[in-house]
Amino acid sequence: MTREELVKKIDAAVEELAPEYVEFLQDLCRIPTQNPPGNNYVRYAHFVGDKMASLGMDVEYVEVPKERLDELAPMGQGLPRVSVIGRFEGTKARPNIHFTGHLDVVPEGDGWTYPPYAAEIHDGKIYARGASDMKSGVAAQIYAFAALRKAGITLNGTYTSSTTPDEETGGEAGAGYIVEQGYLTKENTDYCVVTECLGVDKVCLGHRGTYWFEVQLFGKQSHGSMPSEAIPAIEMGRTLLDAIDKKIRTLPQMNTVSELPIDPPASRRTTLANTYFITNEKVNTVAGFARLGFDWRITPEYSVDWARETMRNLLEELKATVPNFEYKLVELNHMYPSLCDRECDLVQAFRNAGGDVLGEKLDYNLSPGFTDQRHIMHVGGVEQTIMYGPGPLKIAHKADEYQPIEDYKQGAKIMALAACELLGVAD
Image (cartoon, rainbow, N blue to C red):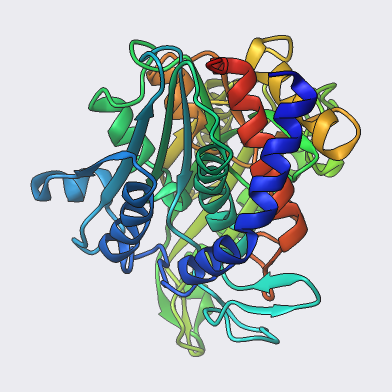
């Protein structure tokens, strides 16, 4: 079969299946899987698993044991964490391409024009929490396989599709767990595609590193009418924020623009954001305790270890020089940056497929935030791991999140065609 014939077969199959799979994506979005705490995970996993089984895949459910929920899902309120994996072996077991996407979404928040879980269609777009990030990616990876089956195309390898929980809170109970348990490692996987919402016309090579931490400040509380009796925690917090401005945000590492195509361009620098500042809520009481949260995102040129040491040194300097400055540094999480070689077979196959489907090869980008790629590359050892999904990144986590139906179809075509190039097609 020529490349041109293959493209035509896949295109026709995707278009014919489109009504069914638009409805499938709507149904996925109508299952609220907010994380935290992790609602409806079992229901969602079985809905996806049933669809994969109907296409002939061998389906397996992987659940985190109850005794490990506190460790792997500390914000999950003891709710179950389950992943579902579907496999279809072609003429042989290897090579194996594994498509994976997370099933959880962030809470819906306020400001919606359309109901966040109704999955209504307006102007060719499905509006719902998770429509872009990233239920469209999960649906497209299944849709791509369905198109191959409908077109009568047999692969010379294994097509694997999974959906996992908890990426929005780190992924330790999701992709991290299936990697730990040996379902997704270099021993059984040649190529991995995390179907995140990085854009239908981009192949995403990696992501920035992340260091999440909290600084707790210990002062002395007093009555609001007698502030001289207090050691105000709020003032200590202001001192800390001023020091960060003067001694961290001015560092060369914070102001060097990465040469990597991180999207959006404003994220091509290392960034440190103060995300919360919490004290008491009593208007006539001077707070003696405060908690400040920070989200430090590090471009791949620098390390999480550098960021951690820089913050520790600053806090120790303040303790030594500022009277009554007492603190505790609480590390919440860290994720090392990841980067796939842009010249590898996986990247080039997706670029080529983009050329056939969209008329020009896919461009490169990197994610401003972490993804499950880090588990698969750093722990699973699967070097050829990328992110590719049809969702628009710009609308992720926002009110009126949406998925363009045309991008959804084009993404499925590109996934199917890239799988054919990487695994080979039987005569």
